Image 1 (cartoon, rainbow, N blue to C red):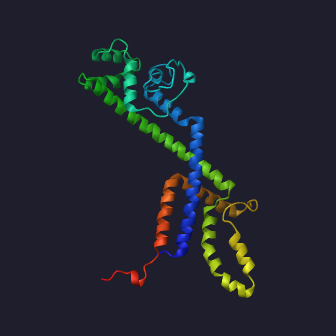
Image 2 (tube, rainbow, N blue to C red; image 1 turned 90 degrees about the vertical axis):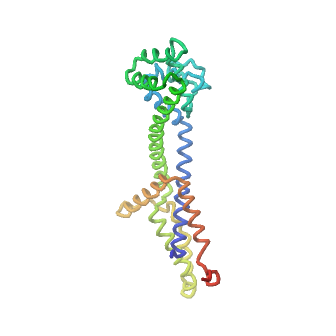
Image 3 (cartoon, helix red, strand yellow; image 1 turned 180 degrees about the vertical axis):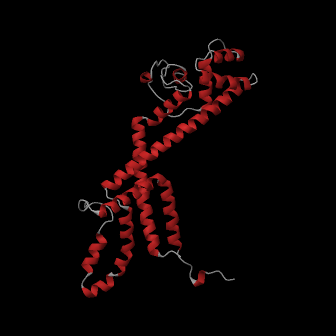
Length: 279
């Protein structure tokens, strides 16, 4: 069974990793909001999905639609003229906006087939023509299949955005680890020694070494007291920083959940003889 020292060390490490993850994710969210990374990533995804890298075709028409971008004037000719960029597009609204952007000759279902055949992009024309042929003359079937197509495409965009966010969180956490000298290996070592230092206090009184024990206990396991030495110990410190930064990849919820479980385990303790159920 785990002893109290193991649990104390685990609590200290989880609390530190949770704090680092929370700070890194908060800074990442602030950076994403300031740079409008979500909106820009979504726009790039729609442009790629509709094969409109220059933003002069269907992507522009969709983004000028009030269904997709209700805060915009609907008159943007270039990306720079987009007053507002949505950070999220509901698949059903995208499908409706795309169909309305394609329709040029009329509102009948048969006219939609002609408009699809008039599209210049071969890949998009083939895709939409297949959706149109499978719709059995019902526009709602076209909308449903276009919605699914958009949803699947955005799943890939979302995955790429999450991977980039994880990289940014890792770099932020690594910067924090270096600036604040949060070395996971040194932190573990210090937390592991603290219980033995506390246990040594009574014995130190008799030999007059109390002051030294107190000084050892007051040493924080994080922060800088002197510039790092350029020797082999720096390699271990760098490795400890990397471990600390890697903890941010799990996310703050993971570490807070682990911390809660460990605290509950520590609080439960072991059953006494009187608490043991009788058979």
